[in-house]
Image 1 (cartoon, rainbow, N blue to C red):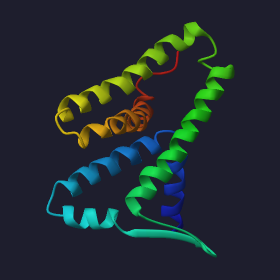
Image 2: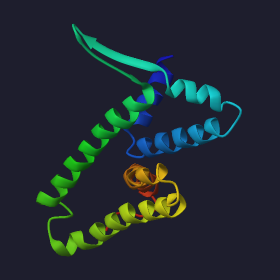
Image 3: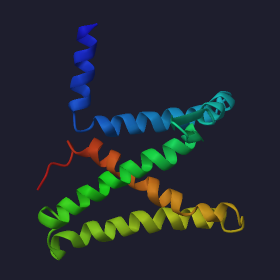
Image 4: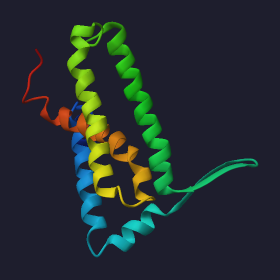
Length: 154
């Protein structure tokens, strides 16, 4: 058993482990949601999760904890990393920041436009245009981490 524990620790220390985990979980979720297991998958996401301290209680389905809680933490960390790079890293000058800035804008606008194209006629669905723009960042970062060994730094 200690051998398995050390292998897991070693895997989690890798810079690409988050990308592998993200891609694996996304594939599992796609398979589960589009298979006969979809009912189980939906009921899993609807599992009630609550936190209570005295009279203060937050009770939401697991899906909302993921969407609202974990995504807020993720974007907070992305924001901190961007701030660090702007203040003294790779994005500290306009020349260095121009390409990543336009790529980021394309990564936000592109998925939102594709979503809007397919949902334009549905007044309820069109309100979700920001979701693909936001989640695209998580997948892009995960994918870039997976390709880090293919494209060495400058």
